[in-house]
Picture 1: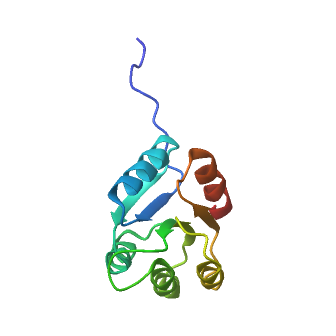
Picture 2 (picture 1 turned 90 degrees about the vertical axis):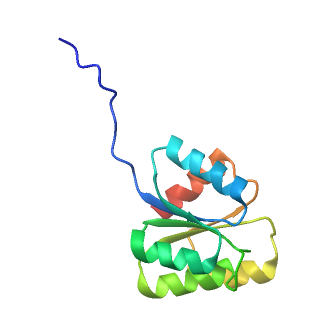
Length: 129
């Protein structure tokens, strides 16, 4: 008798998506799932991201630099990195040198410009592993 169950592999790592554009967050989530990453959750603000990071303890955070709420992505990443060992992949629609220099201070794994593609996402994730 053949086993007809689908072969499932354990997800590579857990990723928290911090993106205030719901469509961008959805697209990134679908790309991550398609390449076998588990989703720890999605947050639109820095405050929500800090709470989710505390509860889900992700391996990687994909962090938009400009967020809803009082904290930007760089400030949010700094707060999270004080307490947790996690890789940060920044995502932005703006290649502003000011934010790039601020982001460098957090020791990020990758810095992606929007729109995020599967190719750039895979490369960034390999840097974060």
